[in-house]
Image (cartoon, helix red, strand yellow):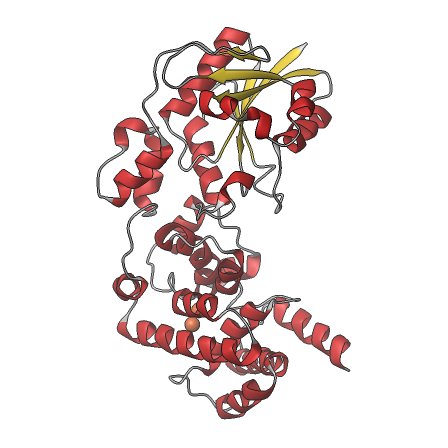
Length: 372
Ligand SMILES: [Fe+2]
Ligand SMILES: [Fe+2]
């Protein structure tokens, strides 16, 4: 029967210690493969700021690329809800029906295993393999030990070191270290405004301040989270002046549609959502989506998304024929202001002979269906 090991983790970041444990488990228990299961939002870390799951998962893929018998799984990353170990094991049982599952955990996790969600259920689904990072012996009547030397590497220490400007190159797979450096992940950002100033032209920076202030005003008016509006407004154009946008999109696995591939001016929105995660440590999905959809919009936009979209067009530095009218509408209805912004963008593009993104028409017909 096929034997599959599962090494679940936050992997922020994945490091050489994880690879070593996976390898030892594979050798000692004759596993056909080890699946690295990147967590989405781990239940025991609900209140902590954790780097976005997609970015952590990219690092896992980079770490194991080209290695035989290792696989990366993004099931939890894409799930969008908290999942327990039992959920993951049931998932793997379904995907690999005639398989023995081995779930790999650390010695410290074993100590509070009885507090996990349904421990008896977990033990029915898999064999627990335990690695004690201190190199000690594991005494357990329900788990088996992966034997090996002491592993001194920890993800939290790596993050702390990078924050303090200390290299973690010796503890990370080369591809992961290069990725972290290139994308400025885990670096200390004392002040968003100061950092943003170094990334944008002066004009674009002033526009960003205008969008921030307008977004905060609209958030107050419509009961949205003002802090989120402030951050999303300030950072919405953070990728606007990057000179290697397509290269960075490939690196961060940003999926662009055909329209965006033909129109480089639009790329900064989706790219900016990813660089906001990496360079500014933003993990809040509402803020990320407000940045991602601020240029072309999408049907069924959330309140914060609409606020940033509208603020982008009506902030005090903007000057186009309809701007005064839309500013007035925005004081009374965010939905009407949003629709006016989309219609105005369509008109401007048509006048310039430029293409109009299909989302604009989808949004307009959605609004007519809803409000007429
Ligand atoms: Fe923009
Ligand atoms: Fe903008």
